Amino acid sequence: MKQKVGLAVGILLILVWCLLPVVWIISLSFKSEESVTTGNPGFFPSEGTSAGWDNYKKVLTDDLYDYFPRAIINSIGISLIATLLSVIVATLAAYAIARLEFKGKKFVLSIALAIAMFPVVSLVGPLFDMWRTLGIYDTWIGLIIPYMSFTLPLAIWTLSAFFREIPWEMEQAAQVDGATSWQAFRRVIVPLAAPGVFTAAILTFFFAWNDFVFGISLTSTEAARPIPASLAFFVGSDPFNRPASLLAAAAVIATIPIIVIVLIFQRKIVAGLTSGAVKG
Amino acid sequence: MTTTAVQTATAKPPAAASDRSRAENRLGQKLVAPAIILMLLVTAFPMLRALWLSVYDYALTAPDDKELIGLSNYVTALTDPLFWQTTGITVLYMVVTVAIELVIGFVFAMVMHRVIFARGVVRTSILIPYGIITVVSGFAWQFAFSTTNGFINGWLPGIGDDFNWFGETTPAVIAIMISEIWKTTPFMSLLLLAGLAQVSEDMIEAAKVDGATWWQRLWRVILPNMRAAIMVAVLFRALDAYRIFDNIFVMTNGAQKTESISFLTYRQTIEQFQLGMGSALSVLLFLSVLLVAYLIIKIFRVDLAQARQEA
Image 1: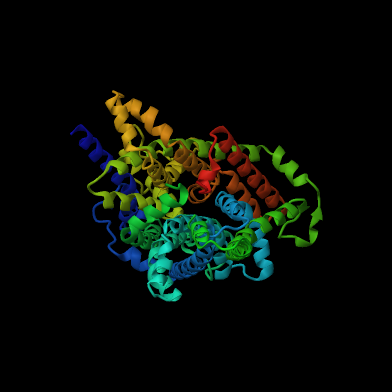
Image 2 (image 1 turned 60 degrees about the vertical axis):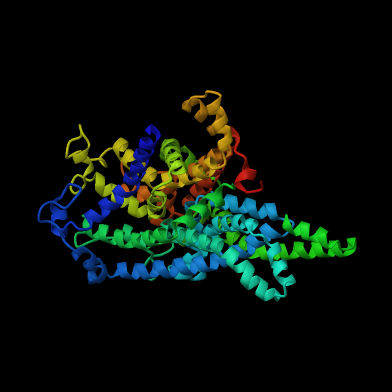
């Protein structure tokens, strides 16, 4: 009984910890713009200062904030392309690591580990310079390349952990039973490998969606600036006073894809995170 | 490995087997080549370039005045108190946040390990801070601490409604740390959960039968058996915390001496266009990360094979 109470308290603690700041930013996004400029303290909008959906309408449609919808398009495009390419490259590498014996396997794993710990900021100077020379500064491709490089380690770990668990003999068993190699691959291996590939894709997407350092250093206009960078440069009509409630509305919009992904795929993400970093 | 098992089962003659292993070797290397090239293209190559640029006096505002000055940039950086101050504050961020995350993360992991009902709800909520954009977390906490629109001053007893958290170093650093801890504790707790799952229930049960208290079971059985997982989690999080940047950028923009070494490097390169000096700082940042990694691995004897999954 005592244990059950402790557990319930623990669950409550986790929920409050995780959700309070999220509820707070949502609540802030409903405070009216005028009341926020003069000051509207408190967790919920004070009496008569609720803005309804006005702040959301404004950041999505007002010309003053036209860089924000553009940033949403940039973020979605860049993150999806980077995820797709990174997962393809990582799948090839992870297959080799899990299935084949070859020289340099340790080297690949060490490089991946080293990159996962790399101080990204130390790269922005040289990359800034190189990208300008190559003409890919402030373009989608200029962000996609570093996102791929920095998500590969996580994707390779997650995938090779999954691939090790696949009973590959089943492929041969299917062939013995009369399936062609393509059928064996398509009907047996793909369904077994798909969850792992999918998990790697989600984790890669999170990284690209979250990135800030490359987003502010390798872009200068709205042509490629992703959401986090766009939020940091968010200015309203008064450049010395950040429009807190509008910014909150934009932040909530940026969080929606994360919440949707988490709601649908929580089991897969947990499995991927725990298998990718510490082998069970 | 399954491959070797299959090979021995088919029992090829020796010559064919070595042909086959050579082909396997080539195929393996071909398959990992794109990943290796991509990873090195964006890290090793720019790092070498930084090394080269760092011995020049080179500002993008005056590219024609580029001049070879040897190690002067390093001397300037290392003799500047600002460099040591930012390094100090970075180490402080790292030590405090990782220590607190380890404790809270372990409590969360224990709860998640035991929870039966509401498992999906707990998992979903723990993943929200993990997935949320760090910049959003920074803004959420900055506004929460703000005097004009926040709620924290109103909720905390003993703190005046007009207390400015961002007016002085200590409260500003605390605010930044809170945002950092909030966002990354879930990651820590998931890594610890994986470690906790490896501790055998029989062993805990046996200790219980032998009369060990809850506290003794925790310290004598559970923690020693998940040592490897704890160390890997600490290593990953510590190096991540050492690179702290986003929260500082959003919450204080480096004001009130809250600037970290990453932020200083960024400011020199991107905001002030001092590529020479910025590159020297990049190299120093890189070396300091290596040093931190080395120290953690040595002091805590982290098993890197485990981190590389060679078990």
